[in-house]
Image 1 (cartoon, rainbow, N blue to C red):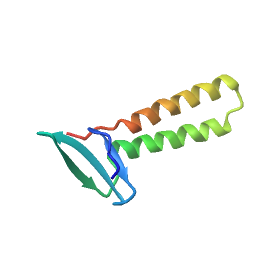
Image 2 (image 1 turned 60 degrees about the horizontal axis):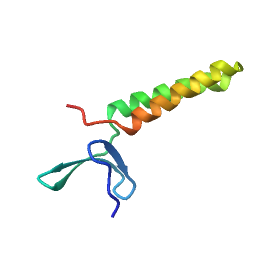
Image 3 (image 1 turned 90 degrees about the horizontal axis):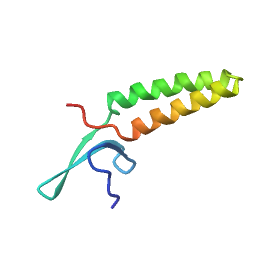
Image 4 (image 1 turned 90 degrees about the vertical axis):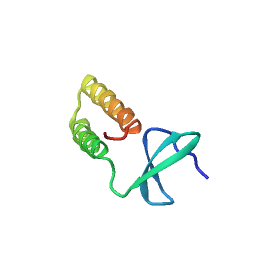
Length: 84
């Protein structure tokens, strides 16, 4: 069985759902939902916009800046927490 990262959203290929795992009293608690978290969707659109600019850009400095921006957004996507 795959162990999910605690305290962040993960996608379960097996279940076909998003899962958020916490640990309470030594036991894992799983929360499932079909739709991706709202923040994930927003960040996905940001990456799409930046990627379009990246493809159109010809300046090396601009390409590097946009690529770095995409990597930062990707890191945020991997660390999305449960909305309160």
